[in-house]
Amino acid sequence: MESLFKLPDEQILAPLFEKFPCREHQIRSLASLISPGAIPCRNLVIHGAEATGKSSTTAALLDRLCEPQSAQSDAATPAAQLSYARVDAAQCITVRHLYERVVSSVAASLHAHDQAPKRCETMAQLAVALGEMLQDNNNNNNGRDAQWRFALVLDSIDRQRDAPATLLPALARLSEMIPCLTCVFIVTSPPAGFLRSAGSANLHFPPYTKQEYVRILGLSPPAPVRHTTQQETSDLWARFCAAVHDSLIRAASRTLPSFRDCCHALWPRFVGPIVAQTHTPKEFSKLLVAARVHFQDESLLNPSIVAVRPSNAAVAGSSSSSTLSNKSAAPTKAKVSNVAELTSLLPTIARLLLLAAYLASHNPSKHDLTLFSTYHHGRKRRRGGGTTSRGGPGRSKHRKIARKLLGSHAFVLERMMAIFEAARAEWIDDGRPVGAAGVDGDVGMALATLVSLRLLVRAGGGDMMDRSGKWRINVGWEAVRGIGRSIGVEVEEWLIE
Image (cartoon, rainbow, N blue to C red; front, side, top):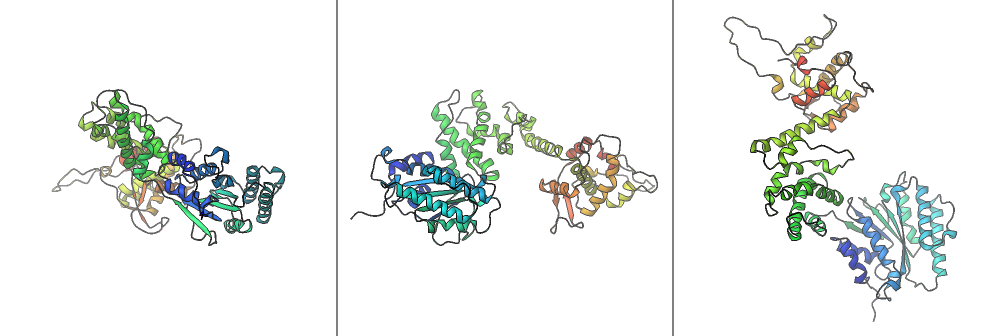
């Protein structure tokens, strides 16, 4: 007795295994749940993190299953008894736009443009239009088997704009009214029972592991490096991909496209000593130490069309003739330069808040009235680098450490805002050009920006907008002095020694 359950031919799935490695289980499960000869379901939910191959794998598999029988080796397979249409819901502006895209995609797949309605505004009109097109197409093709099915793929349906709460349950009910229809929902993280239907299957695409990342990129190694063979380059490429994953991908980004881009961007810098004949391909540890500065640069994960010049630390770290002291100082210089570049992009109001926070964390609160009061002189008094201690007979004199060289102390948010309001007028109205845009008045937005960039850190718990909460500045003296000079303020004149 012939079995009613029949999986797709292995010759159909074999090219997909080569094109999408590490996804054999998902491809077989998806083929079983969609193919008419296997166990087709009414609703299928494909979920997983971003860049895990959900959309590309589904589209490639449906293309293979929908090929005509004459192009396949076995004409008895039911692969040609399937048609499909794919709609990207993220590109639809409104729900009505989604309905009309579904109707036009189904009509294009069935070659029934004359049967598609001109407008489709409600779910009821969508159900009627799909039912008529699928039923008429099945009646006009007498050669079709009774097992013929149509798959409607709704990609990124969870990103549909202005979607009502009843959209997904209503789309899941279409397969109940149209027996030959299978709805495939591709989402990122579906909530429990979001379709409100018990007859739906779920297929998970898990994130790639480190071994899978290395295996995927190992299938397409780069061209042989000069003075090396292809085998040596392939072995070095596999170890290099594992090092890139441990340094950048596992901590900052976990997607295959970003991992591939990082590897291809770092590879020329990594094999530079091999091209210069200062290291051999077997000296992987020395190559890793020579390029460790590049492995610490996360800017590769955010590519830009603006070329960034390599810092002095990167040049010192990549040079093979640099001394041990230069190599140890390279990460510190890179960190300082990164902070300086970050703070230089801040708006004027955020820079003023950062200067006020630095003064609040390094100046004692008892000197605030002396520094910022205008009662006697009409303007704030600058200390000019500090005051001298009182001298007297019998009192020992000793040298004190400058407060700017000590660590930052916690300060109250209300005190920082008071210093900001008191000193802003003199810092700005000093005859210096502040900028074309001037000073932004949205202090709350600037404060939130500093907190999000970790330039200001909350010292305790509680609400962020609590004015009595304590904060701590996370910027050093060199960066603060550069920020002050960028707007024409000498911070040393406002510090108490």
